[in-house]
Image 1 (cartoon, helix red, strand yellow):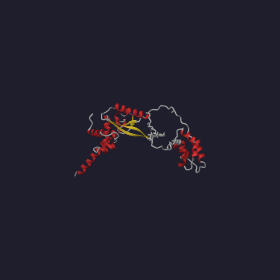
Image 2 (cartoon, one colour; image 1 turned 135 degrees about the vertical axis):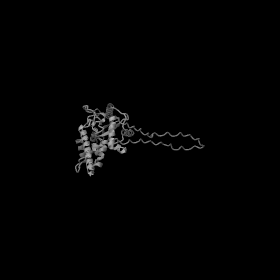
Image 3 (tube, one colour; image 1 turned 90 degrees about the vertical axis):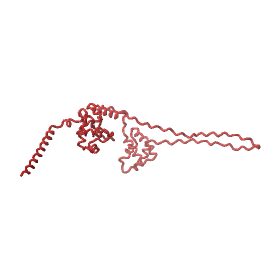
Image 4 (spheres, one colour; image 1 turned 180 degrees about the vertical axis):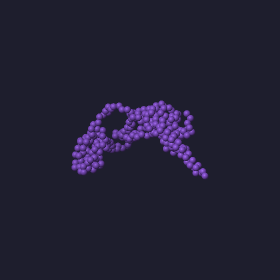
Length: 308
């Protein structure tokens, strides 16, 4: 199919755009000085009818928020409606597979332990016996090898529960806990970590809504550790009813942007844009006739003024 000159020019420009470039009418009109926004919009509509492009609304999830953005798909070869419908379905299937695919956690290589210095004493070098002297000498004292000290065991690392309790006094001055207090409350705080919470959750639960003065910090923390402990969560996921997968890609009309299935948008146009309202056509025709009548009346009045 041979395209008009304007459509061929805009199609050549679009074909050389990189992936992810702006394809809206304003951006294209700003980059193509030969044609304005109306001309670019009409050209994109013609290219969509010819089978070179389709507009689609894409579902994007970012930081827990869902928004819809318009994407334009371009094909140098003209495609029919069945091909574009199969392309949209393939894109939706691929997005659904990526969303449901299990993510494999990255394995962090464990660092090999550093080689330790041997604690065994080195054997003394062999001593070559000296030649006997002419006169007998008195033997000197025998050197004694000092006994090697065994390395002291490294102190045990404190548990996450102990560390969370120890830092309460630095975060909230009304809850200063001594080392003995942290040891006494360590078992209660450890039960929180077995239920899937982290240090921030525990600290927020213990420091939020404090009274103006806390008489006994250890008693206050013990009471909160007992009363506000979170519930156990099931380890196995509860069975849920299968739901229909969400379509992440939905075709939209090239003219007005109305979303819909590809089957409902042949040639990339909705029914309203494909078959314009006959009333609108008649009104436009009446407006053209009225405009011609006005011009004719004005010409007649000017002729009358020129007469003697």
